[in-house]
Length: 452
Image (cartoon, rainbow, N blue to C red; front, side, top):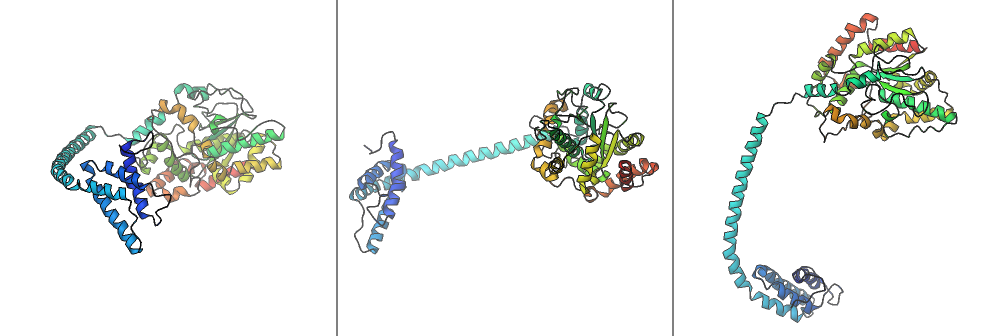
C-alpha cells in the first residue's frame, strides 16, 4: 500500500515525492533539514511509482541520484546519508529496468510508425483545406472598398431624420448651431461652446456641470441624425442656449437660429477626413487610396457637398447678418484659443467670470480632450446607427475625433500626394478665386474682418 495523505491520489503523491521531495533531500547539505521528508516514506513511494515498466527511466535516474549523493558525501569526508529504505527500494525498482527496456524497445517502433502515419494524414488535410480556401477566395466577388464606403455613408442618416433636422425643425431664436464642414474642428467647437454655456450658467448660480456627459453628441445633438438616434430636437438641454451640431450649408439649415461656423485649410480637411471616414465606415486602413478618396468627395460622397460651396454659403450668410453668424478659422483657434473663447462667449451672449474662462480654456484644450477622448469619439451616434449603416457586428472604431497627432496645421501639405493637393487647389481656383479669395489665407483674413 502506498503511504499517502487523505484525499490525495496515490500515484500523484508518489510522483510528487519522487520528483520534488527526493530531489530536495539529496541536494540538502543537512539531512535534518525541514525540506527532507521521512526516508522510508520517499523510498516506499518511489518503489510503488516505478512498479510500472513505463517508469523504468525513473529508476535509472534514482540510482544515479543515489550515486551522486554518495559522491557528495565522500567528498565531504562523511558517510553518505542515503536512507536504507530509499536505497533498497531503488535497487528493487532497478531490477525491473532490463524488462522495461525490452518492452519499450518493442513499443517505440510501433508508436513511431503510427505517429508518422498521422502526420502524413494531417499534411494532406491541410493541403486540401488550403486549396479549397484559395478556390473559395477566387470565386468570391472582389469588394470595392470605395463603393462600400459611399454606400454605408449614404445610410448614415435616413431621409426622415434629415427632413426632421432641416425643414421639419423650427429652432428657437436663442438656439445656436455649430455649423461646420466635416473635419474642420466641429467637435472642438462643440466642446468649447458647451463649456462656455455651462460656466456662464454656473456664474449665474445654476447647477450646470460641463463634464456631465458620456459623449458630446448627447448634450449637443446632431440635427440630421437626432431622429435616427432617438433624440428629440425640441427637448430642453443642459442649459441655455441650446446647441446643435450641423454639417449643413446655410441654404439647407433649419431657419430661425444663429450659427457658429468653423473653416479650415482644405488640404488639412482632406487629410483629417481621409484618416476618419473610411475607418468610421468599417473600411480597412489603406483599402482606399488618398487619390480615390479625394475623387469620391469631389463627386459628392459627403452629404455636406464640397468644402468651397459650404464655406461660401456661410460667408454670404455672415456678410448679410453678422449678428446671426460667427465665422472662425480653425487656425485662429490653434493660435489664440483665448481670443476665440471671448468671441464665442460674446456671440452666445454668455458672461464668463475669470474662473469660468480658465475652465473653458482648460477643458477645450487638446490635452484635456485627448485625455478624455471617449467623450469625443462619436460612440453615441455610431452605436445607434451601426445596423442602419450596415456595419459588421464586430466592427470597432479606433480613430476617434481627438486622435494622437491629430489637429495639426499643415498636415495635409505634408501627407497628401501632389496629385490630391493639385485637385484641391483646382477646386479652390474654380470656386473660391472668382469670389476674390485667391488663397485660403486670404479667405481667413476676410473672416477676421467680419468679426471686428
